[in-house]
Length: 110
Image 1: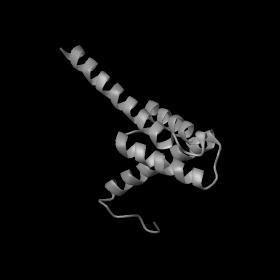
Image 2: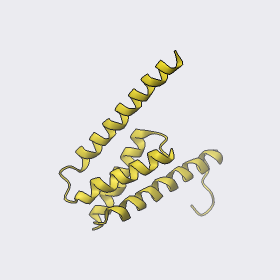
Image 3: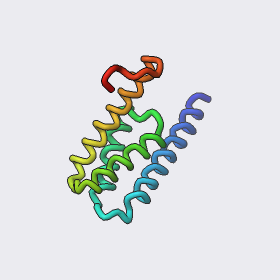
Image 4: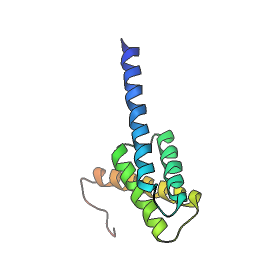
């Protein structure tokens, strides 16, 4: 029974990941920089493989917003944009964890 449940969960997760890939394609398909979609896919793949994605929707929105801002700043290098988006997402997670550990109080100077 456990293996059937695992198989169902795996298929559901695969569909979710595929849905997010489609969403990324929709977000960036008419975008002026083809590097934007590639950067998103690289960043998403890396974060998913390392297990850093806690909430798929939040991560999708976060990466899309950051990469969109980079393109608007004139960035065109997909690897550079992906690396920057990954670093910013990891920093976002660290800050969220820190805020939770501190009981919602920000550290001095932040």
